[in-house]
Image (tube, rainbow, N blue to C red):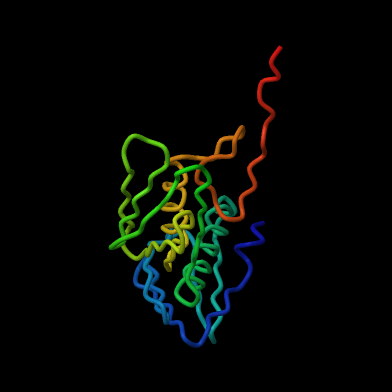
Length: 176
């Protein structure tokens, strides 16, 4: 039995959740998110509490996933999501201008990345990048794409990493 799927979701006063067919729309102080949900899972809302139920035991996985997705949508429109990245390496720097992030990370050319809609990119210093938005999935995906430009390597530790990420260092060649 999916334990996540059985948990109820408490909806804050500032948030409205509406269902239209298979689409669920969440409106809050930071914005609005819409997502299409699986029709096999039933959605019930009463007195500021949302419950999901399934009719078939084979739908355990999608049951928990749908509940988690809706909880993330509510969290996003209330508080938003934020990912922080650090650039480690000599000469590595980032500049954000007009929601376009320009990375100089040791390639012969600068790498430019346009932020998706609903995501803001800022740089507090030349080596710190902050990504903010209301959709957890979009913020996380864009952060992963930035990290993939130059992922951290284990020998010198150079690369782009999450602010709270720990890179395990390896010992180099011993030589003769």
